[in-house]
Amino acid sequence: MTRTQHRVALSALLVGTAFLYLWDLGSSGTANSYYATAVQAASQSWKAWLFGSLDAGNVITVDKPPASLWLMGLSARMFGFSSWSMLVPQALAGVASVALLHAAVKRWSGPGAGLLAGTALALTPVAAIMFRFNNPDALLVLLLVAAAYCLVRALENGSTTWLLLCGAAIGFGFLTKMLQAFLVLPAFGLAYLVAAPTGLGKRVAQLFGALGAVIVSAGWFIALVELWPAADRPYIGGSTTNSALELALGYNGLSRIFGQSSPGGGGGGGAMAGGGNLGFGGESGITRLFGESMGAEISWLLPAALIGLVAGLWFTRRAPRTDRTRAALIVWGGWLVVSGLVFSFMSGIVHPYYTVALAPAIGALVAISGRQLWLGRKNTSARAALALMIVSTGVWGAILLSRNGSWYTYLGWAAFGLSAVAATGVLVGARRLSAVLLAVTLISGLSGTAAYAAVTASVPHTGSIPMSGPRAQEGREPETDAELVDLLKATTTKWAAAAGGAQGAGGLQLASGRPVIAIGGFSGRDPAPTLEEFKALVAQGQVGYFISGGGRGGPGGNSEIATWVQENFAPTSYGDTTVHRLT
Image 1 (cartoon, rainbow, N blue to C red):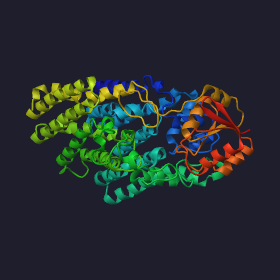
Image 2 (cartoon, rainbow, N blue to C red):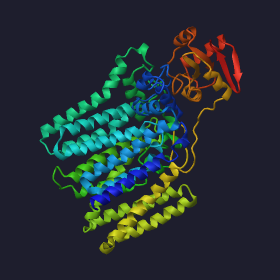
Image 3 (cartoon, helix red, strand yellow):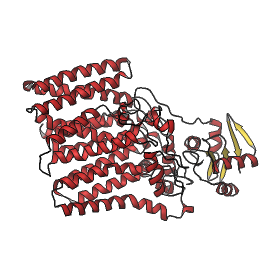
Image 4 (cartoon, rainbow, N blue to C red):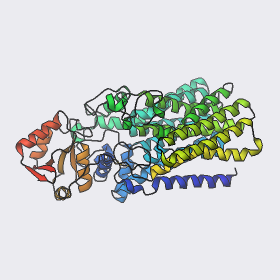
C-alpha cells in the first residue's frame, strides 16, 4: 500500500465512521435523561459543570465523576443545550478513538493492520451505541486508546515523557468512570517492564513515575472535592459519606465487582446483577461475554482475537525481549483478558454497554495477529491458526445473527460460507489467490458486525441501559404534563420544584429548563437533601413546588421529606400528578 493509498483509505475510514456515528444523531433525543439533566445544569452553572451536578442549584451530583460531562457541558454552553450539542462530542470521541487506534497499531504492524483495527472498532455494535449516547463510556474509550498509543511510543525508545502521558491519560480515565480505567494498568505495566529497551532499574523507576502521573491526574479532582467545604458544594451522588474517594472505592469500585450494596444505590446482586435480566449482564461466568446479554454487543471478533493472541504469543516465545509484536500482544491482549475476566465474573451492577471498553483491544489483536499469521503463512501451523481465526469468526457471527431471525440468519450463513471458503484457501496455501482470499476473509469477518452496527445506529435509543440491535429502544423516560411544565417555567425561585429521584426530577427539569431538586439522587436513596436542609430551603422561599410520586422512593430523608410536605402543604392535581405549592 502506497502512502497515497493509505491516506485515501484512512480518510475513507474516518469519514465513514463520522457518518455512522453522526447520522440522525438527534433521533435519540436526550438519550440517557440522567446525564442529559447534568449537561443541562452544566450549561447554566459553572459550579454544576465542575462537579457534575444534576441541577444548576447544586444539590447533588451524578454518581460518576464529571469528565465526560465537562466536554458535553462545554459544547452545550457554546451552542446551546440540545440533543446535538450534547451528543456530537460523543460521536467525535468515537472518530478520534478510531484514528488513535489506527495510529497505535500502524506504528508497529503497518498501515493495513492499522486500518483493520480501526475498522473493527468502528463497526463494533456496542461502539455504534456508545459513541452516539451520552454515557461516560465514549470518553473512557478515547482516553484508554490514547493511553495505549502513548505506551506504544514509550516502548519504542524507553521514553519517560510518553510513559508519563500514558499515566496521565489513564488518570483522566479515572475521572471519567473511576476504577474501570485502571483495568488496563496490569497489562500496560507488564508490557513496559518486559519490552522497554532500557535497563531493568530504569524501567522500574519509570513505571513508578507513570504511577505518580496516574495519581496526580486522577487525584487532583478527588482532592478538590475533599478540600472544598461540603456546605458550599453539591452532595456526591452515590456515596454514603459525601466523599468522591469513597464513591470510587465503594459504589463505583468494589461494589461493582463483589456485589456489595450501599445506601447510595447498591452494588447490585440478586436477579438484576446475575440473573436473567439482559440489561444487567445475564449470568456471570466465563461465557458471559458470549451470552444473550453481551454477545451481540462485543463478541463478533472475540474468538478470533483470543485465537490470535494465543498463536501470536506462541510464535514469538523465542523472540528477543524487546520484540515489538510480542509487546503489542501483551498490551492489547492483557487489556482484553483482564477487563474481559472482570466483566465476566463481577457480581455487582454490570451492564452490556460496559463491553465497549473491550472493542479497541479486540480490533488491535485481530489486526496484529492476523497480519503476522498472514505474513508467516508458509508455516503450516501459522496457516492453521489463521484458518481457525477465519472460520471461528464465520461460525460465531452466524450464531449471533441467527438469534434475531429474519434476514439476519441468511446473512450469517452467507458470511459463514465465505469464511469456510477463505479458511480452506488459507489452509491449503493457495498463494496465487492471495488477494482474493484476503478480500473474502475481510468481507466474511466484518459483514456480520458491520450490518448489526449499521442497524443499531439507524434506530433511536433512550434510557439508562442502551443495547445494540434493530429494535428502537425506549427506556423508562418520565412523562411530563404540559400544564405542569408551564407551571414550573413560570417560577422565579432558585429551584422550580423538588421531586423524589433523578428520573422524575430530570424529566421535569429537561422539559421546563428550570432547576429541579432530585431528592435522593439517581437511586432516590442518597441522603441529599436531608429533611432539615430541605426545610431550610423551603423556609427561605427557594423551592417552588414539591412533585409527589416522581421517584423510586427510599428510606431516610426522601420518605421523610415527602411525609413532611404532605402533612404541611395542601395538594393540587395537574393531570395525574400531585403537586404541593411550597411558597
